[in-house]
Length: 149
Image (cartoon, rainbow, N blue to C red):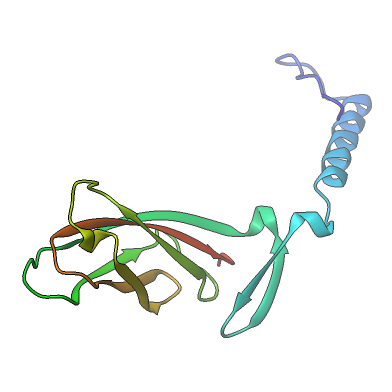
């Protein structure tokens, strides 16, 4: 890709310089043009599959922690929610991956189920079910992919 020299302060902009700018912009446009490898397909509930440029899609990485403080009963639950910093045009795709925070905790932290209960254009809510008796803390990595407004 060609580089355009920065004009000196006070230098008049002549036709040659404007021509160099236009060529550089056109080269850049060709390099990031619409090819199949630069497009992202995002399935939405309300509008079907949306194909957008990868550079125009939005990806949010979030983190929340959930603790089960019950050491006497199985099936303990911990609710969580995460609000996105910006809205999506359609309900995004959300993936939650649990991470054991305290390796010295009980087996309860290794026997969990994550259920997303509600996903909107700016928030995700869910429940972590601890299937084994014991006190445990888990972190959830959230990966949110969608089409921005």
